[in-house]
Image (tube, rainbow, N blue to C red; front, side):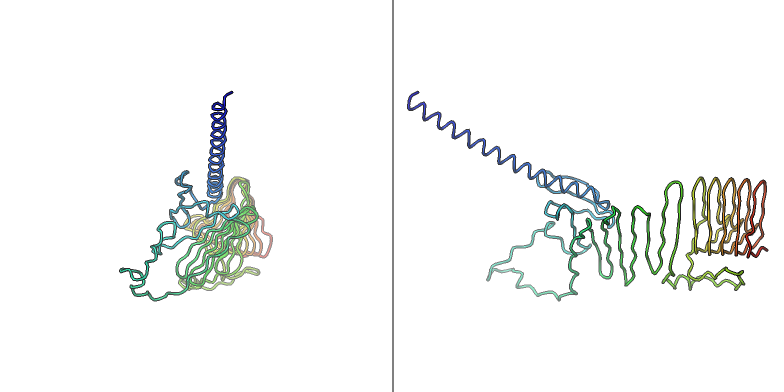
Length: 341
């Protein structure tokens, strides 16, 4: 091989190495871009409050809608913190974020029309410092003056929504045990599955204005064990229990134009410490259902209680205004302490 041929071969080898190095760097950069965008996409899809609207793979920007506040925003991999998506939503009417609008460049001294020549606005109340992301999952916060809402994931795989307004707070938690609502000193828990449902209420409501607006009922003398309606949860819709449901109602006040409560199929229903009033029957039990009344007052224009088919109803320490009606093989079991009229 001549000296000229050797020089050409060396140049070819060097060019080949440089091309391989350039291609490897480009691939690494593309892989890094794809990985960060993929991690951001996964974080958005794992957040139940976010809906993915559009993806700009080249700019690594996702357009998403925040369902709880019905806002459309953009997010980038810079919003990820250890795989969690952390957002600080601006309020409507607030100045746009740095991502939405770049800040004006600070003018140099002596230039006309600078920001320093304009009067400084009066400083308003200090804004709340953004909270650190929760260690147990993604957190999304939003709020206005005197109002605040926060949605975050819980360690058990559920979610917790906290809302505050004018000194009042409400918490809604979802998890394997069901749904729990804490508000105004009251706690309502809904649990169970397709085969059974349970609803329990605890505490007394702080909302006294609504109770004060209700018309006063004439005083009555409840039977032994039956308590007054103070502090009970008022329900405005009739309650139906069917199929194989198991339903427990406690501490409620229910008024309906037709039947206040209907139980059918193989339903199992327990009513405790409540006041029920119906324009037809207070409680109607049909099919193979079973209903148990404890420490309650049941009133109906046609009758307090109607038991038909193969159904069974029992009462203890309760007042049945309108009497008890049975038909077919329906059975009523008086377990004592009742007033029936």
